[in-house]
Length: 397
Ligand code: XIL
Image (cartoon, rainbow, N blue to C red; front, side, top):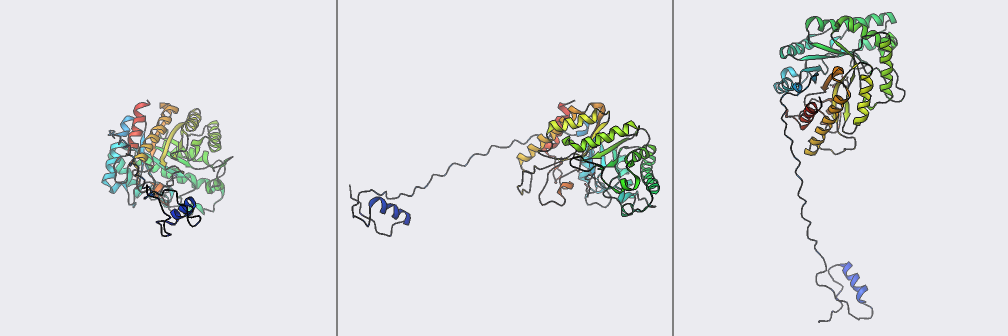
């Protein structure tokens, strides 16, 4: 074997030279005994690309979501001058007419539009929507009579006495409810009071202008006025968010219900808005919250359902991946199942999804990331979540 000699300093790499010098004692005694491989740089064999497991695309076979249910199945729609008005969008009409039997006006029946001045009511845009619903045989869930948000300035700055506040609130409720009751027979329910309670521990009544002006009994008074105008057959709801985690806000609302019922105030149900996400609430907690409302003999309606992405999911993705589509389908199925299991048929006020497509969804306003919380993609194609919702209706009677 050829004896190795000490290599010159210009070896391929300085590191290699250093190793050589240590091992072979170069520059020291001059003894050379350690063999140096000719090409010591090992080029790693690239690992084979893992074959991606294909994500199965579930078949979406449901043709008419609402026909799978014995309860209202609704969707929020825009009207008036909105760019996504149902009245000017053939693809939105096709979805609504195929899958839903009820609509909630997302904005067009809010006080700032219906009642812009104390002596002015403006029903034009709402009536256009009502005419469409009548023509299509759709029911309407009225939204909303008394709320601290999206109301006109004149209400926020109303400077009347308590008696004047009471008269003003009664007029506001009775005029609006009567208008729809006298002109249409398809407004089947109303959100009479929305979001009256604060969040957090020991949640209490919010100091809204209504509470400060009318008094602590404004909720009772609002339901009594609404019943006088709506008649006996329209369901009257108290609507709020965040009760599904079964916490102190739910307990405050149940205490309110107990008081209202003890005074024979006409309330028919509680609306859970259900602006939830992929992780919140857990299904068991949600079912317990629903059961508590059912135990009061009230109806339960999921009034504004959408499912935001997990707060842990911080990727800035621009479209729903197949994996996320499947997870969303599972989540819808689990939540709809939970509702069907916890709420007996007689107490079901139904389920409404808050927006037709992701392009319509309020979750996608004022946010730096895309949300995918409703049942149809922005291009109007149905999501697996539509089938997840349908599967729950098929599997759980
Ligand atoms: C939202 C609408 O979706 C938005 O278009 C609007 O800008 C603000 O209001 N709770 C309610 C609904 O009761 O009326 C709200 O709707 C969402 C939260």
